[in-house]
Image 1 (cartoon, one colour):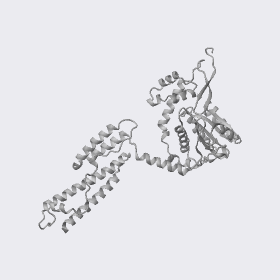
Image 2 (cartoon, helix red, strand yellow):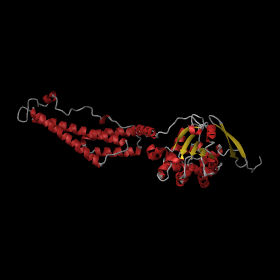
Image 3 (cartoon, rainbow, N blue to C red):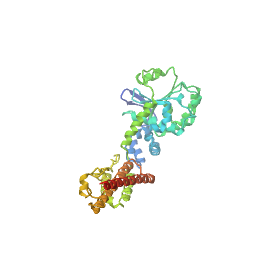
Image 4 (tube, rainbow, N blue to C red):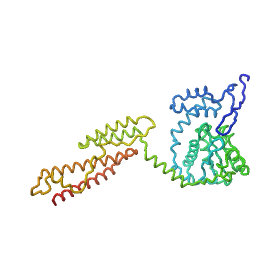
Length: 432
């Protein structure tokens, strides 16, 4: 091929079920792919200030290179832009509770995978109401399904399919504001869209597409396929198995969208995650050390506090590695070694203290009685503080801390309990 000439070369990429051929432009008159290793290295050089996991994501860099025709500067810009967007938006953290109103409509869900293993997202546009929707929630709804589709992909699959069904749609279902916002996602999900199929594209959609296509890059425009409702069965049976498609598209799938089951499953997953709550090490360290400093003022708790401090510092150093859950602290000092009975003292204990046949006026020893009462009071204080610490540490591990009102409430409750227990002890002693 003559130097400086431009041409297109066929490139074949194999998947698990069939072979797909696409045309990739040549670079500088050579037959190099626009995502070759040399270009990948060049992009890495341009984004070397980004975290290591971004630099090592070769698949993403190659997708950005393909979308930009091998232009390393633009590809690096897209990688950086996607990284910054994920940091601020946190798409992976969008939960079913965040988009509950949108999920309830049932207007979108994943049908399954096509013959190439690409997830297929179905959007029933007639179930969308622009006047009822919340824009932020609708955008999150779109991101949620894209993230779900990506999570379903198995290498070497990197793309998904969108099917937009407009057969029952009217003009009131058109939401230009939302469409423009969702079109921006192409910058953050480079080369993730494999194909888009629009069913029932009437004159309204034709008008919309004339406007929207200018918001999409050339690659995305070429992936949009407009088909009539009479030809959708033939089209979809060529790309997907019957078992995956619903009957209206020529398939035999019996799947029915069930909002309640989706929310129940999401709630179960949330409960499981909360059972193993993750706490940021810096936050945990700050809260714990502040609490230990407060408790160390109490002379009776000083030894326990010091033991807990050393135990905490050891756990913190053991769990300092990234992406590891911090286990709940549980020091032997937090668990009472003996379960104290809040009822009358046992007879042998009364014998030891000289209270079996004695009283304040008679054969009893008042000094021993005072010593016993002091011991009871000390044990009550220790039990009270231990219970408070157990509850407080439990909330602390969940990323919470007690407010002043909660502290006051529990102090009052435990004080009343301690007073009633002491009063019952005195009454029991006087009876004997």
